[in-house]
Image (cartoon, rainbow, N blue to C red; front, side, top):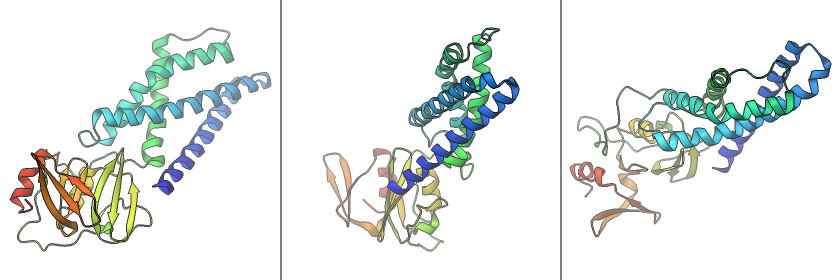
Length: 264
């Protein structure tokens, strides 16, 4: 987990430096005046850094609010760009007045918003595809089932779930998957050999493991049947006890599928 986030942080730093340098270079070439260089460097350094940091938070807020399992990545990207352009429009106009002081004044607010939105779309595309590597398109055309996915078909052999089944496995992790848990926007994968984090949606991972012995038992949990020690009932809720001592809650909407599969 620490290694994954460190890698993403380094990619963000590289993106901030690269995009700030690009915008400074473009602006200086357009101005054609050496006197404007300090102002352009100050403006774009502050604007790009603040914009990137702000868009990181906005992107996470959009995913948490809209739901990463309900909306494809491209829709979340578009929403992030449009929503993020609102506060950035006011910030850009304030920075222009404070640092640059354009001789002809500022453009209308709506025009600033459109310009910021276009720039946001480009930056969000970089953020989703190159930095966080968030999938823009679902693995297939199937929607969410709203409940637990069923066990493997009777005419298909039951196989143990391994990290290699995942299209986006955690770096450096191998072995048989015991269970998986969503943490923020990351999928925490636990195997018999260790654990690791990957930026992956539970719905996609569940589909990729559809022909194995496991099932999704909660909107945030997936469990291999071989890893189950016992399933107990506490009041009206079922709890799965994993061999390593982990308690996994069973979601109400997933209980029917578990009963059909003979788990409970």
